[in-house]
Image 1 (cartoon, rainbow, N blue to C red):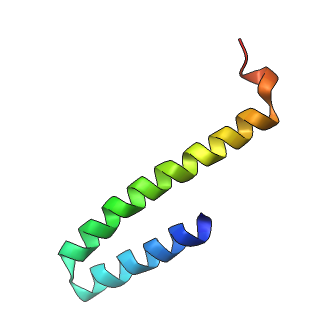
Image 2: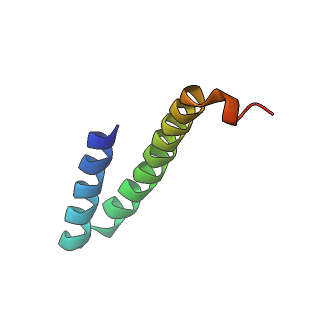
Length: 56
């Protein structure tokens, strides 16, 4: 997931520098969705590693 995130960020920077703003905005939307998914996976891993800290 991290490599995919970095790939998307690299494409976003390239499109911004090239002045291709429509594609840049589309990539920003993809990055947001991908980053939120990555955060969910990380959160699940933390909860699984330390379940007693999250069980009331």
